[in-house]
Length: 144
Figure (cartoon, rainbow, N blue to C red):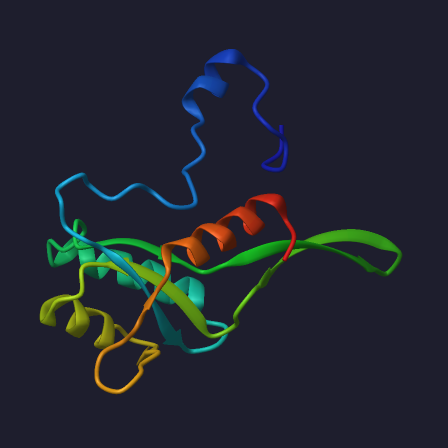
């Protein structure tokens, strides 16, 4: 079996659990909001992994709960063959769900290849939860 085939035994199916696009934050009463972050274009995946690892290292994984690079699958024809690839909805931008404190702000800002938050005046505005849910629904459905 190659890597592109799905597992075919019941035991393998039980072990494979697809991680949700957005995990629910802890039910601790802390208000975590979504913020748009500007990353170097083409480096969003590396930045996502780096930010998650840094949050874990600093013990802030409960404060920075989700990092999302909105992408969709696109079917293209190349050399007469149908190919499926992923395309970013907003190249150079990511969404981060977090409790905004001085520490989390500095962690995000100091992550390599992050230019900063998308800001209005002095504090970054949050992205409405309804917009994030709409985006994730579009990602799940495969249409923008």
